[in-house]
Length: 329
Image (cartoon, one colour):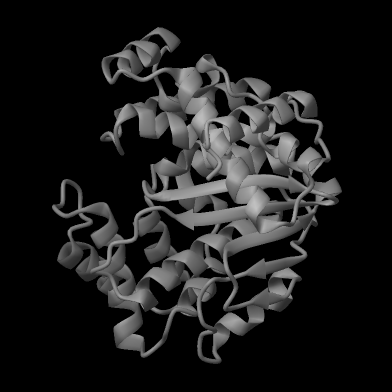
């Protein structure tokens, strides 16, 4: 599978920022050759540093390079997304298997009244990495997500806007992104997110390649299972549940599939940590409910939907229970 590091280098080569000799030297110097040493996050930071410093550019380069990346640069993930039957399905697949591209990000699709938001969050930012390098990587990722409808599924769907939680870059080639993507880019916002009209993201396609989708998902699950543990099992379960809440598919078997283990193995590992799946789900819903209520942007009916409850009455009961135990404080 092609890694994010290799995809960035391929895009830099395509955009003319590097030649093949420079690519080889960077890969050798930063340890991205096979079996090379180094922590993945620091490797990615080293690549961006190698690109930013010599060319005297800032984090806007992340957008510029993303405009030169193709779906073929992302191996199994790119192929898997191309077999999704709707854009919303594609973004959820990316959320489920995003660790194959980057172990420390959370990508989440949430439904709003008439729109769908795709949130991109860096979970664990290394404080030793310069803010411009972190921003370049985040701009790269969000721009790729904005291009996904056209590049991977061939659909003429554009975001309503892109929000970036970083200062605006200096003027440069990245500015053509608004024309290419067909939407405004706003900097200095609270979140990294895309906002889409809801209807085109939920519109289903008629595909004849479902067996290929099943094969690719199984391959992605196995690759995910072979990756080093990102964190303890309860934390991984909570992360899977947060991504799954809006779909309502939050069973033990659903989460076990995300983590590449059987339902029995998942429950056994949680029991070893003296944790219960139902309690983790309740805690995740409680925290998400508190966050959504604090924003003041959603009705209780909308929050009930975003938390995956089948009926609003069930959410209302949960609110009363949390309030009695002071869990919403």
